[in-house]
Length: 321
Image 1 (cartoon, one colour):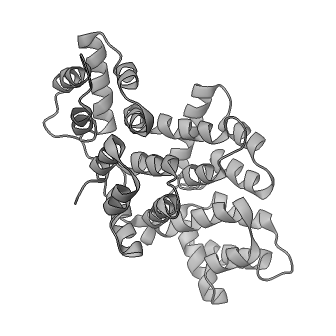
Image 2 (spheres, rainbow, N blue to C red):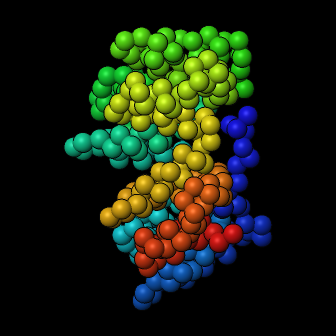
């Protein structure tokens, strides 16, 4: 099953790791006149998030200072955004991204889709729990106030953790579910969207892969073709994201990165979010997929779209290999 690709990170824990030494080196890089940005990049991009938390603790205990505060006061712009992101525990980081996507006027639906539709149930539970602890309001309730219609119902089902466990699989049920999807979409006039969001938000990713295979066997068309013909807007985008994450998550993220850099201007928020959130999971797979899909490396694309310390920090996280 393609869902079981072997995730390869680009950032792994440093082997000979000494948090006290790193803390002292970071203090030195920020002390006095001017800042040694390269030293900060060299240390923080070559440590795992868990190790960065240990450095932060050593900074506090041994130097009596708040590392995050010091970094914020010394750095600026998108470079600061990346470094602050790297210093934030992963689940907390995703919660902050979700909050930013909904805070203020307007909603960044693309960010909501990217973060929420790519999670399995356990990850989603952790995010929902952390979000409520951080912002004192349930994530599902916040999403409900910012979205509407079938899109809202789909996201709410995903957040409330109704998806089956990753290993749960029933090939016979998959045949039935494929029939239900056909009957709700291509097999009738109009579309019964509720069937789509119930199946796509409840079934495990491995179950959905069976469902999509059965759909193709039954109709001769891919599930993507069916969705495109039947649905539109944010609801279509969200279901498409689930389909892509089921079939090959790195493909989904590679496409998002390409879109973030394609055309005039760069969508830095998306670029930063994906590189930070996937660096310790499967950024190497995303790089491989990117090169295969677009005939250029992710590194070269990022280099041509960014500059200065911002470019250097992203390139360090992506890695040359």
